[in-house]
Structures are given as structure tokens and as C-alpha cells.
Image 1 (tube, one colour):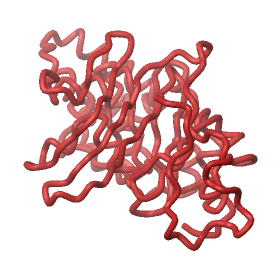
Image 2 (cartoon, one colour):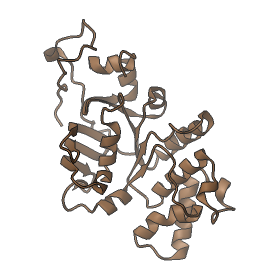
Image 3 (tube, one colour):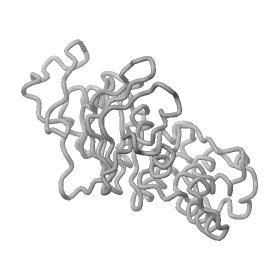
Image 4 (cartoon, rainbow, N blue to C red):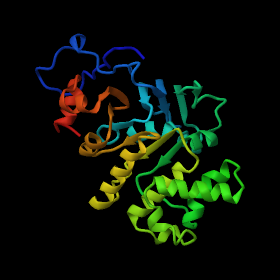
Length: 289
């Protein structure tokens, strides 16, 4: 990843009139330092839909180990498309295409390479979606699903892993007496924490969260935010959110995307208080979104 400023779109009329010229811009995308151990590296990554549309354009971004990385940007900028690329969700639709690399550290495996098994990638890189989507099964079987895909058959091992995942998702005490009841009987917030437990059960290296609280009420949102912060002590988290206050509250690093490009990446406090790129500043200050 080079220490250079991303190209400005000269056609946009949104930037401030007094913005410095492109050649004078300070670097907006900076590499992680030696003090910031990496869990993954996104290198020159692009994504094309089956109709040929390029949704992601040459993105370079570090994903720091056991930190929360937030991805922000206006609607349609490619946030969710990038997130779903990290665990090969786009493979479910024929004709979609990746370019570049997503390197998982420390092994150095390219998760989008031809030798990477998408099913195994999804176990190593878990995913939680915008709306709670529990399987039409019991609470227990929802959490055990990934373990069974991994080939684990011993009931005692599955029992222990299910309880551990539900505890990590801060929902064990609420469901321990109804594990074999339907997941659909839970509230929306409980269902989302169940989905987080389902993603945690196979013990992933990275957990992806795609606007996980947008369908929840404020109380449930606060519980999920507290949970995500606690989980970051043991698992690397990447979260897409349209809520800038949420990103500023819970993330350690923030990436700003615009029209498929990663415009700026840095410490969250720096992004929100002293953005280096005028396009980031325009978004943060509400000039467009």
C-alpha cells in the first residue's frame, strides 16, 4: 500500500472552494505502524458485478488485529459491497469478479484467490447482516450450524461451543432455558445477538457486521454496541454503518469510502476531528451524504 493521496474527482462540485490543490494534499491513506499488528490486508482490490459494473476501485486498507474498523460513506458508495467481498458472499451469484488480494495474516493466504474455498472462508470470516436473519430452527441449532459445517459431530463439543458463543454474545442468560425453542420467538435485538453468536461459534478470525443495529430500537442498539466493543478484545471486527455517531463511539479505525474508492483511513478520532481529505470533511460535516 502506497502512502499517497487518493485521486480527486474533478467533476464533483461538493468540495470547499478553498480546498488545497490535489498535489498539495497530505497523504490520506496511511499504512499501519509496527505497533498495530495486522489481521488482514486489502491490496489493490476491485470488484465487478456480473453486468460489468465496477463497484469497488483499487482499494488498499489494513485491518488491524482485535480492533474495530468502521467503514462509512454515503449510500451506494460500496461499503457493503466491500464488506461482503471479504467473506466471498458475492460468489453466491454467478459472473461477479474480484481483482487484487485480501491477505489474511499471519498465514498470508489470499481469501479471494482461486485456491481459497469460499465455504471455509466464511467460517474464518463471519458475517452478521443488517436485519436479524436467524435460521428457521431452534436457538441451539442456529448456533451449532457453523460447527456442523466444520465437520464437528461430538455432542459434548458442540454443546460447549454453543454455550460459549451465546455467552460471548451476551445472550446466554436470556435463552439458556429455551435452547430448543424457535429462534423466531426472540425479540429483534435478541435475534441479532443470536446471529452474532452464530457467527462466533466457528471461532472466526474476523467478524463482519453490516449495519447490524439499523433495524433495532435504541435500547437494543446500545446492547449490541456494548457487545461489539467487548468482543473486539478477542476478535477482529469490521463494521459498516451509516451512523457516524456510532462509528465515532465504538471504532478504533475508520475508513471513508466514496464512489467505490477508499478516500481516507486513519484513527477514528483523527477522521472525525481532523480529516486530511476535503471529501472526507465534506461528508463528516454534512455537506453531502
